Image 1 (spheres, rainbow, N blue to C red):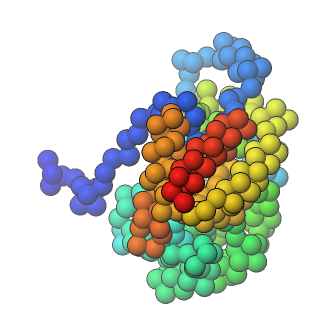
Image 2 (cartoon, rainbow, N blue to C red; image 1 turned 30 degrees about the horizontal axis):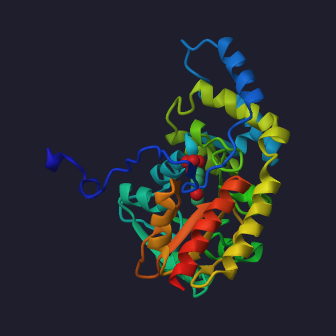
Length: 354
Ligand SMILES: *Cc1c(COP(=O)(O)O)cnc(C)c1O
């Protein structure tokens, strides 16, 4: 059996996580607000009038229309996936041969590495400059020296929260020979998308998702925006019915009712600023600016803070020390009362230790 498995797959560890059961869950950057009940009802009505014995639309025309209306990109420049995770898989399938080089800044989103490993490519992770500033020149050098097939830019970045200034994105696009994948999973919390760059850069591909600002991590709907030739390549590797009919219907409802689905954006951003201001006053924490719905900080107390919160039934994300990063914590904004509770517990830990 072992000898039947591709060598690079033999060494991988399966991504198996249980859905967390905690009172406050802020470890996965989800929205703390569930999808509005009035839209859930509308959705169930629609499903009652849908033939579930039939395959869904293979190329989701209604969803493309709704996404085009939201993003301003024509429908032939959009493709959807079962979460942007599936789109990252498709990008690798379509562009990356074993041994090819893929470049990203580091730390960033784990999925880039997971799919780089599955495609048996070489993943060069360019560490941030001190103070967690992305090393733009280092990224350009790594991509050019190695004729990288893909260069990921996560903007705003997960987990550090930093944003790439538009001039840096342009500098990179002008310099590298790669397909530049601009991951805008959190763009609604920042506001300045790179979509306008698509007109001038045929090798740019933008990834988006309904999992974060739209509060729909449960339905698995991501999309990519690009120029038609790149999008056409992705359609070649798309599984025929990759988005089920339930996801398609609900995603359209979410996009058509943005007044309801995005109404908590302002509150989440203002919570981020309030929580950030409090954390910055605590001793022993290095808090980084965030353009997203989460906050990232480095501290030798990471383990203690993580355990203290866990014992109070609160789940945050903790990162262990790596060669290039000290111990750190990331947590997304919960509801205001939840954030207060989290801050109180962190306060107890840091002042007990101070
Ligand atoms: C959460 C996240 C995504 C979205 O993943 P989905 O598969 O669409 O849920 C993509 N990129 C980054 C950086 C993320 O943090």
